[in-house]
Image 1: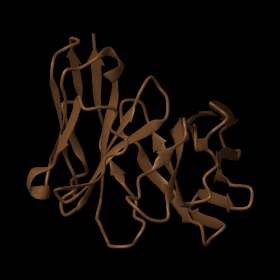
Image 2 (image 1 turned 60 degrees about the vertical axis):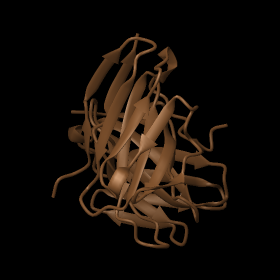
Image 3 (image 1 turned 45 degrees about the vertical axis):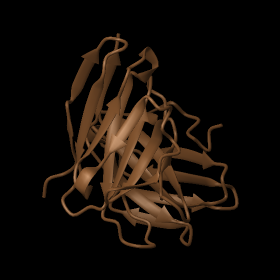
Image 4 (image 1 turned 180 degrees about the horizontal axis):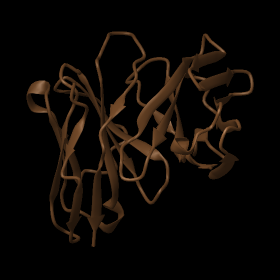
Length: 113
Length: 116
């Protein structure tokens, strides 16, 4: 049973435009959410996070939005650059316990020059 | 500061053989996690160490997998005997271990295991 879902396996965006990656979750006990970027043959690299007490977190070109009532989060990249081409994983973690991450299946973003 | 390192980067073994993966966390990080990604699917949690103690091993697939973290520094994950379905990329991650605080986990490059 997939608790974190990324329904779009791939996304193509023109350079300079906005990339929007989406993620849905089912477990209301999740209270910490993260986005990781992964290049081929490398490990996931932390991008940005958000806790459940906030609905938006911004870091440079990257903004994560959290809609708790809809159990939905999204990552906005503005402006998109060719170097952003990678697989993006959404991850969620519960409020207590071991803080293990539950990952989605990833969305492959391709930014076209 | 050195990141999380994993060894080997690749391993190809035959079914029934034994393989040991190693992870060196970021220096000073008490929390160490193992994850696995199979066949391009999601990255799945295997287990979590706090220092040398296993905090959560609910994701370990079966008793062919044994993880250790002697001395609370590096960790090993042994698969014995390996089966075809064990093929995948094994990631290690670490975090500092501040009590009661959600922390970012930093991942290593992974070990790509292929069981033939």
